[in-house]
Length: 128
Length: 292
Image 1: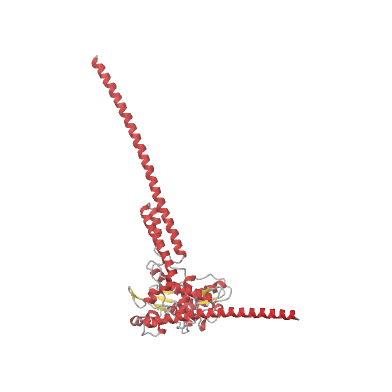
Image 2: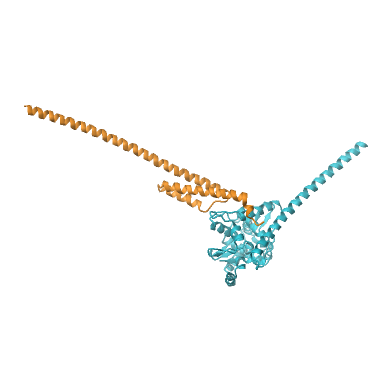
């Protein structure tokens, strides 16, 4: 009789334990899911940010290159860099796209400096 | 009576002042004109003196042969090539194209009536009505436009062939380039500025290769002097495998220093041609020619 009661109590406790464990595990699971979802969202945001950064750099490279072209001092290497940056971005390699766009910006700024120098100093190089 | 005298005096004084101011103005214009004419004359002399000093054993008129004036071995090979000149077909095709009758019944001869006497020696010239430099190639297309024909592509092909025929008919004539007014001088100065301005990723000016270090080797090529370049145009270049104009060569030079080539027959290249041809003033037209 006592044994039966004891068994009943143990079985009740076991059931309770199992129930508690199940609740805990569900809660943990829920927490992990929400964490994953938060992580995913942050990661997407970061990718978008990088993509937007490389797009901005490509736009800036185009702008600077147009300025160099306007004064007739564009380098033949610059447009190739911009095209390659565009391709890298389309392929999802935003890091490479940014690097190439930055190079193109630097080239255009150098060619604009070259135009300015020519404007101010071309006569220093004449024989007359 | 006195009033009439005073009026007369005022009239006379007015007319005298007017005449004086017109005379001063015209004197100023003449001074200005002679001043830029003098500047250009000095430029031509100094340009020639530079090459005379650099290549003291070469007669100044020999520079019309470009790099073959300064390198005996290359000259020998070139003279052999000239025996069966690779541009001959272009001259024939150019002559044929020149004889073409436009849809309106007119032809090139209506635009260039003196072609057989030689006209290349007067190109480029400065058009004082439109205030721009006119090259032979631009004039060919202007002729087509006037006669409602589609323009030809600049650089090579039929337009270069017609240009070759015009040069061939002008062989032996001496370059006689005019500088009619101050605006022409501005165009000349723009061309001069282009010639001396460094461009491209390699930071080279036309003057660097074809003036300062002319006669030096650049990789496997001997750099030609800029003096005389325009006399030999258009040119058949072996590495092109066809005939091209001076502007095609400018574009190639720009590419070589990693600068984006400019528009063929655009203002920049036309002004450069004006300056460069002016520097070769008085030299003999010997185009078309062949080069490596």
